[in-house]
Image (cartoon, rainbow, N blue to C red; front, side, top):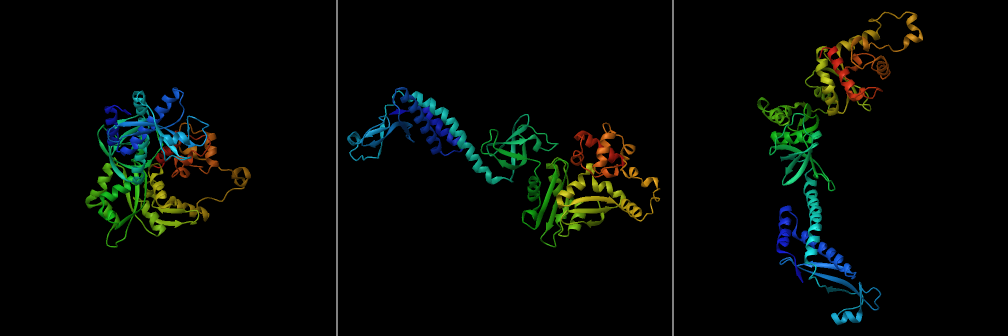
Length: 441
């Protein structure tokens, strides 16, 4: 019999308590470590066997046993024992039984303690990771208050209920500036059992954070009277939330805004002044699309083929830039919110198209204009705007992609432009800015 050092035995219980791991799991890990230490020690003594260790849960004393199977004729002395010899040790032994034979551990204490410490660290880490996974897997989508612990190059390490979590900088808002010890609201987005980094991943850009903030601030949402039908964000910049009331006497938009904007302003402050458009949901697709373009006012909505999900929205001339938004943000978010591809047109554009269709706006083409070479698309883009890096070759490719002039680029996104060969992100944004400037936004 041997006794593990009292300080080590006490540390086993302390670690179990600190990490919130069942003591039995920790003791099992120590017993496994002791068995491995015994195996290594006795193998060095030319005794190869199957060893098991048992640790007293009260005193810390441990015993090591060599397990041998009772057989009629011994072929492997280290693993087997004859029936006659086994019955000398235990009269009730029978062939096929396994005997646990106590081993001398007087020389094993120090070696066992060192091995146990090494394996203990690993086992405790594994048990803790499993505990964290079990605890947080059911909390995905929950908004929690986390404390800022430290800063890394690509992430901010937070603490939630004594567990480290990771807020990647790409998941933080553009205006987020944190101090160590500061408490911030985040939403739990994933838990990884095998991650080397902190297992719990959180976000401040996920739409679920905005939804939960509304649930906390608006009693009508919390009790189910008002329902959030959809929520889309370009985090830190702008968001749209579609709401619907199950009670005809409750205005869903007014409930979310609050008296003098008190409710929505609390959320805006939490999200670093992210603009929030609260949109009234409607089962009528045309009405919902018109609502989604808020703050712009639509004159009419022309639904196209439901399968292609394309829709044309006509607005007053002065409302065109508002409907599209800076770099197409407003119409882009409205499209995501409604699930329709929205083409915003001004009343003047539609009038000119009608005139052209009726042959009133343009003179009849001359015979020369009808020649095949005159039918090729001609770009006016370089005549309308000047952007560094936009050369004739790239303009030709834009024409072939369906963008012959500035007007055709008015509500295009950078992602769409980058599909054109030779277009990079920086040039795409500069081109969009130039188009917006050209139309006086």
